[in-house]
Image (cartoon, rainbow, N blue to C red):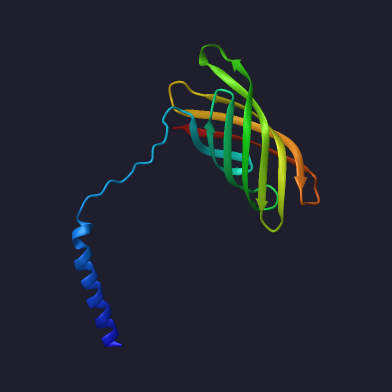
Length: 164
């Protein structure tokens, strides 16, 4: 056992000496570029489901969102959902700006004791502050549930996101 340990230590020293020169040289490391124009948003959603949400606005009329959360209300199960929202109308609210009203499909994968899929039409109303990088939203939707005894699906909640 002592011989094996001695051999491993000698090999580590030998390999360390060979790579010491290359380890001391600086190399170019690429930096991940996250757009800072307010299109990307990350935050929390409280409701059904509750969890972390990330959204990205591709244009002034389309936004995609991903939520990873938990269903505290009924089945104690994890939920992963994604949606694509199309802006129907921008509601003006005086000098404070506009509130986009969006509608689009959402698919949710519910992972717990049972596995099922919800497909809903999601309606969202949101507000982005002009002076601070925060976005508030509320959403609600109805649809169909697959692979479960219940066939009626719904979602809803309120959230806050930080605009990147």
